[in-house]
Structures are given as structure tokens and as C-alpha cells.
Image (tube, rainbow, N blue to C red; front, side, top):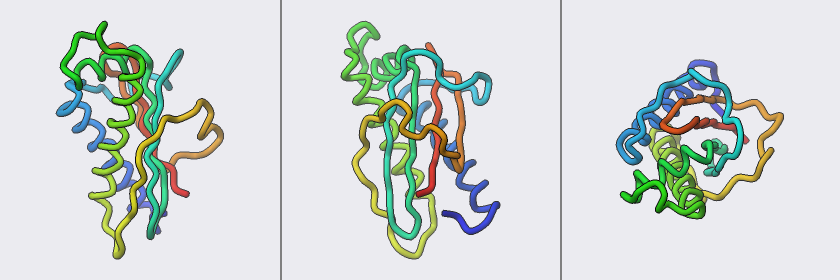
Length: 150
């Protein structure tokens, strides 16, 4: 975990910027931040764990409709051609891109070990306070990205 508030704030801002960059460049989604509440209704979630000098989890939760849009954009297909399984796989790839970029931006004396992304179950982080959390309005829904220290 970061040793001071400034380091925590820097990681939070870095997470925000990386998420915006990945959404815009890889998924052709142009997010508006902090204009909505948490994802409401059906959603797709994935997480990316890492360990080392610091350990943590990056999570992404996307409304189901927005996940289908992201999958269609990423796979270059029509939205009605993106199957629910593909949407879930694409959300795993999204959290992998965000988590990997975040690790690359964190300065540590020893390397941080990433783990493969995985689907996230409902309530997996309920009651835990996030070190950083951002909610975005995207095409057809909402997306929440968060970082939890372990």
C-alpha cells in the first residue's frame, strides 16, 4: 500500500487517466467521469490481482449493455453480433489492460507480479473501502473502476 496520502492520490489519478486512455483508444468509448452513480441493473465484472512489494486488486464493473458495446467496438462487429460470453471476455481484457498499465506506472524497487484477469462475482468487494474508485458514464451505460490494496 502507498506510504502516504500523496502517493495514494497519485495512484488514484493514474488509475483514472489509464482507464480513460484505454477506453478511448482500445474500445472507442469516450467516458464522462463522476456523472452517475454505481452500475445499476445487470452487470459484467472482472478483476486483476497483483502482488509484490505492494499487493492489490483492480476491478472493473460495467453495465451489461455497455459491456456489449465495448465488446462490439473491440471486436469490430455489430453490437447484436457480440455474444454475452464475448462481452465477459472483453471486460476481462479491459481490466487486464488497465491493471497492466497501472503496474507499469507504479515505481517499486522490486517487480510486481500480475495474475491473469478473472470474472468477478457479485458482492466480491462489498464492504471494502477502495483506495481509488472512479465511475464513468459510457455509451449505453456505466463503468466503475476501483483499486483495492491487500
